[in-house]
Image (cartoon, rainbow, N blue to C red; front, side):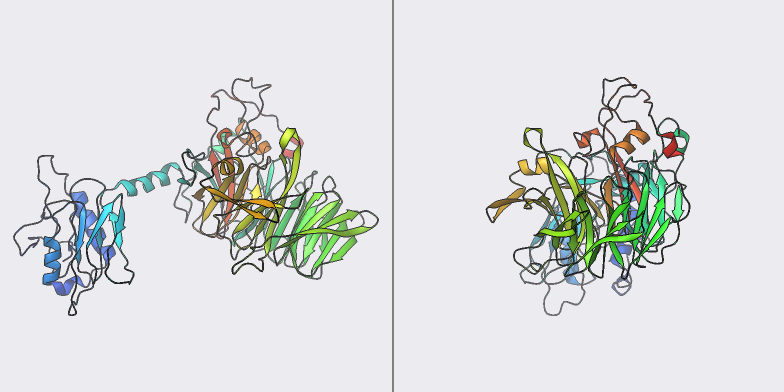
Length: 597
């Protein structure tokens, strides 16, 4: 029997021997089939909210408890199930015989204590199912799976979701043992929506951190400007509306101006890659077989570099504004000269190129569709010359043949005795992220947790190579910290390959960033934290104080984090974990006026 709105009467339980609250109604067994589980939950929740809590002196009984829900049929089996609910924290189910007709034959009863749960079970369930810490433990005599529905009778969970939607707080989960969550105070501060109609494919900050470029599958390319702390407080704290369909209201302060700095038209297909130069030149590679050159101070395209196939990767030669390399679906690796508008060097590869990056002005690496990363020496006279390769694939299993490389990024991490060590981060479509050393070309670490099987999602590293961040197909953003993970022997393992130890790092922190696949996730550079927030170390003057970097860009996530994510819905979200020791006094920031104007 299920409660029916608008009806009043006795609640028959145990053959009509006890009565239920007047707010619960009774319906016939023929009408009970018209009610779904959701309707029963909604009606019972409304009844519980209307009934005042009982006094401590009131005894708790199955027929009078405010959390009691009877979902049994009018059969004797349902009546016995209702009669058996004498314990406030137990759920009993009776065994159904061959002639058992109704599907829902289990009734759950709970006491008035907050946090109790109720559940419904199908036929042929046997034994008792306890609800400890909100977890159901069914005991079946058959090998068949059963679907259970559990819900909170108190409003704690609904209240928590409502509060998060109002103040922008984001729940962060962690797999670290005996360690607090570093992003425990993460908040949703800004949503940029409306300009990208389809999925955002890539996000890229300019080298000085003043501009963010975002590209989409609809061919749109937008440049956003970082707001300045103190000088633009009135813009940073403009009230924002609820972000749909994320259902969380961004609370600010905003990191970017809501009005884009530039919207670059021209591409006729999805944009696959972006690259910045030191002089704020921007390259965009697209499926329309073009690479276009832009500048943040110009509204129109400066030059178009034609290809014979869709261009999947692009990158500037480090320290140069006139040389860049492209990789395309026609398996060609090309080095272009902007000043002369021609191809200087090229090399044919066995498969299509899906990612590309320079490790130095004299070395370029290209990721292929089979999981290989090939390295080529770049000589001004001799051109491109093959050097070595890395195979990023599993040694066994269904993915041993290798999956497409979705992204490569080169970084320099501090090593022993103060020496830096160059490394490369490789993302592939087997849901794995690998960190390899460029001096030995061996895999050092493998990061697990994110889901990346279909989309061209790639991970990025912080400036000191301490933190790795990645989007995922399960709507989450994942962050790994190398030093902490290596120290936790219980959460990380190692495997010896050709005499070399590969660390499997599966401890991470994660949070939901979108209501769809997160296609890109990056840390804001330290310059953006300085300009937009004025972060600096405590105990120093505003004139000479050193700047605190965002997560992974300084010494710790405790110094503050600015995280930018993008999703399949075309939205760009900004999240912030404030520093734990930021001073209250105002901090003046020096901004390059020529760049910002």
